[in-house]
Length: 150
Image: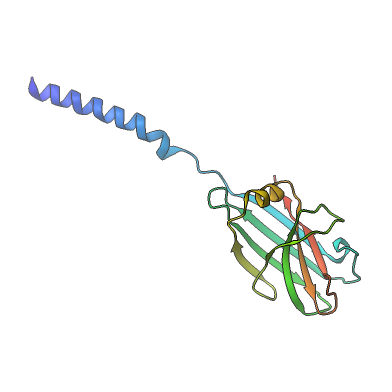
């Protein structure tokens, strides 16, 4: 009889533990948000005459608030002097530098942040852009708006 009571108590305890902790263990981790930036001279304000092209893939981790990027470009007329993530701006607008993008040259693979709440909002509203500056085009040779991949 004691053996059955112990077994029933253990089964009840096990059930309570599973019901209490299973949802947390199986809770889905939010997927990172994915973004793309297609960079060219036509998006720079004012537009440049370069034929250079660039491509950026970015991911934002909702838990760590870090933005990771992989950028590449080719065909630049000048030598890179700076690369930045800018915001609060829509296409055709300019605004302040939020972050330097490193290392110099192509490709660039790194992470930045954690983003501040207002920067996260700008990212999600597609109000950020990447701009690569060179010695020939000091104001920027190529630019690409950071757009969400849905």
